[in-house]
Length: 149
View (cartoon, rainbow, N blue to C red):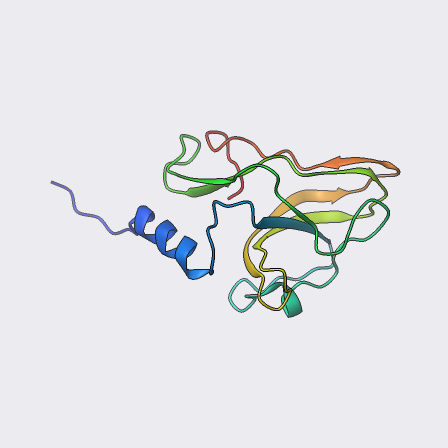
């Protein structure tokens, strides 16, 4: 029998869901977008305020982002990468928007107060994205192909 080191993913996910003060699989998860000038500190940033600066702005986009409409879910060990934990949700979209240089999406548990909104994931788009009175949709792949992670 081979012995190895690792984290027990189910326990980690269950603790994470309980720690942030709400059900991370509930619809109280929101997404906002930041520009390419945002510099996250993944070891120190905890709450939306003061951690999130350089949020995108423009027509069709409201500060603080938007709630994810479908019930998000966690998947552990998806076929795309068996050693990862994935968070899946609907595809958020901003219709009739004019947004410049959106570089990344930030997911957070929304308490309704920016100083207590727990940050939990940032996903870089790989290149700035803009719209001019169009629709900006973040396509969230299935956990089997990546999801949010």
